Image 1 (spheres, rainbow, N blue to C red):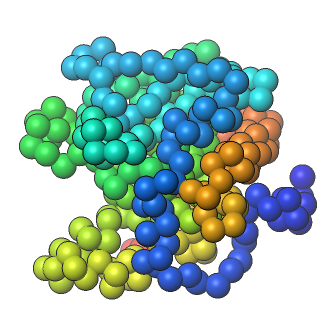
Image 2: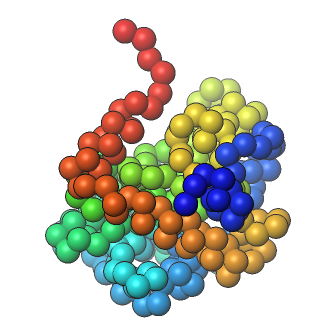
Length: 282
């Protein structure tokens, strides 16, 4: 399918005016926005969730397993937030611990052995920042998760479906193709964290958001993402079923394209894609 045909079907937008950054952050954080399990319930005929990292325990902030997606088996890994205070506490507000990333790596490796494509769904304010997480190897787990994704021979697609912040997001964001929903945000740090560092005041989050340029259009222009996936009018929170249909169509299309590329070429392209990001001088 050509670029023109994709645009006509509304899978993504290549151009568009710069939206208000803070409004984008608010939409990405909307309490009714669909989360990973909401999407898996709608795009998978069957999903079997796997638990535990076989070392420390299970991390509810990360959902991982294998599902039947439009006639093929696909490994899914995604961040999961909660709808109410009890669920949010249980899911640690979608902030993974080392156990969560080790669980993800377990599923990545399984997919590589069985030949299942991998789809990751990114929606986190960042990795768990506590002392306990650091003591259990948080930074190392994030790095190893990225390395595992870089090496797997199967097709990999990442989708930013809400917040994509810091290494907590990038840990499962290494992919052949990176998709981003129209009202999602993708940043190196949360606006509040950025404001606290630069201006010593988290209240300057709106100012930080504008500087970070977290919107889908900005990320596409910077080459951080490859596609912008359309959402229902007003945002994904308005119509979960339609949002899932649009996301599922985009995933299916990209899987078909990536699957046609030989594994060695696919891995080489994945590595080159991420090594070419950013601006630097020698």
